[in-house]
Image (cartoon, rainbow, N blue to C red; front, side, top):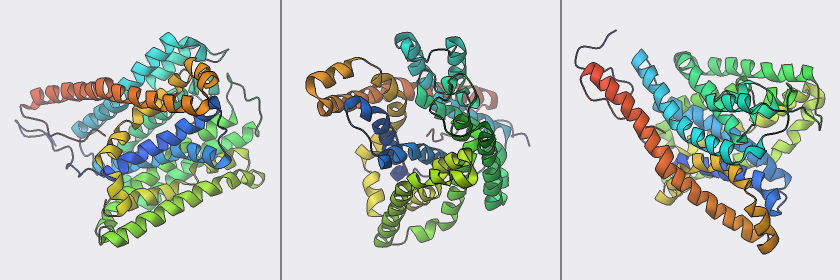
Length: 395
């Protein structure tokens, strides 16, 4: 139904911030940084840390579904969908494009041999690199950015699955799980683990790990968790002691799930290598969803600690930290510092440099670009309708 003259359609009711969840993004990003950077500084990550770093991607995907479903319980008009898309674009693309451009200009040697640099750059700029399950292209230039192309897929399907999920959340999750199983089953047909997976050919690992459809179930699980949070919010906020117990229990369940992950690949003898590897990626997702729901009310001791200003600011820096760490790791200075001062001192210097760079990127690129893009869209919408546009969260 068209809006009356002089008004804009209500896009969605503003939701209270869930500050306790923001630092979880930084924890996940820090685990990934440790997994990628440890060998450079002489630290060989043990099996648990490697699996925890890998599982952190799953935490990102589950939290993305939760936060979007929480902030956007409905998208019932074209205007609402349009602004949602603009907010998502403004959230991830400007900083990604800036870091990708710098990487291409100053670190061209990071591209694997045999990969067309122009094709790789085009796929990366368009954020569709993981839609092409070829390792050399999906991880080209700035490898961690492959997860952003999965997020783009999630953003594209979110408006389509939001209404069905509101009506039948568990059925929607079952459908998403069935769809996510298709790429791992195809991966089974391509063959088992090999140490020489080609960088310029389709391979099983890319299908079950990087391909967006394979990760849909984690995103939809987060959306279902947001529905559960909306239904259970009142019981979850009763009593600080009870809330603390729930939070600690959920955290313990996450730790147990991550510790158990190294056993999952042994399922390959029963379900095939593609499905087993896929299960390794998603197995901890239910525990992550439970932790998010437990922390979201902000009533327990753990969530109150996470909601402090320094912790929230680290969470704000998580996106820049995640995108910057691999380009920074490629700088030759770290190898020289390890030789001169030792791995511990070099790692500390790298961590400090990464945090400073992330803060500067957040302060001067990520935030201003997001505000400029959203502001431009709002001014255009305001001009069409002749009224002010409601401010919305951009996280």
